[in-house]
Amino acid sequence: MNENPDKPSFLTTEPGSQGRIAGVLQWLGSHELPVLLALFAILGALWGFAELAEEVMEGDTHEVDQALLLSMRNPADLSDPIGPGWVEEIGRDITALGGNAILTLLTIAVVGYLLLDGKRRMAVVLIVATLGALGVSTLLKNTIDRERPDLVPHHTRVYTASFPSGHSMLAASTFLTMGALLARVQRRKRMKAYILLVAITATLLVGLSRVYLGVHWPTDVLAGWTAGAAWALSCWLLARWLQRRHEVESETES
Image (tube, rainbow, N blue to C red):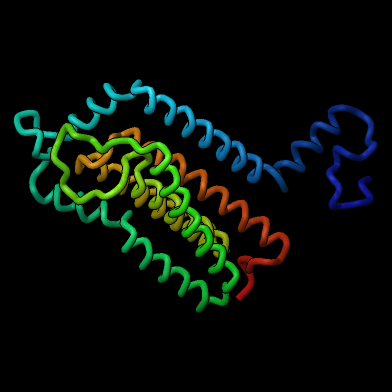
């Protein structure tokens, strides 16, 4: 019998290796498994980003990038993205979702919601997470300094370097962080799943629109998704840790 309910059962003196292994699995499943999975996902994302950045700087991804970018263009006229004109217009509308103006307005709206819902400390976490993602994105762009695609005309204005895609990274970090934080303060599983699904869908659409409009190589977008997802998971872990310490509001607080 474990006298300390907070102490993992595999640290007790219960005889038998099977009992200890079962205790390990039970403890991880009830307390630490989501955290461990998130940590492994973050490490995997960071490793993938580093490998991708190395391949890009060595020029090993150029052929794949070129083939994927041209697959979204009319072969008879590379200035014309595939599909009718209204699809191109939708692409520009979607890509705006990852722009600084929209993300700033969305962040303000979500922060306002959290404040009205009594989640003041969670609102502070969201502000710090969003500004931090912008800073990391800018630092990575200036460090790697990859040229924009020059195979096709750009169908929207660009001002910064290409790798990683800022729209993709900021969309991933902002939408996924917001989704994770909003899901943390919801009690119903259906609401949690819905919020996360919307965040993931918006992130994917923004990244695809950047390639469709010819302003990013596919590997730029993949790197942005990877870095943004790692940042969002890190923010989720931070919020979870702060909630455990009662420094950030939990699902039941109002």
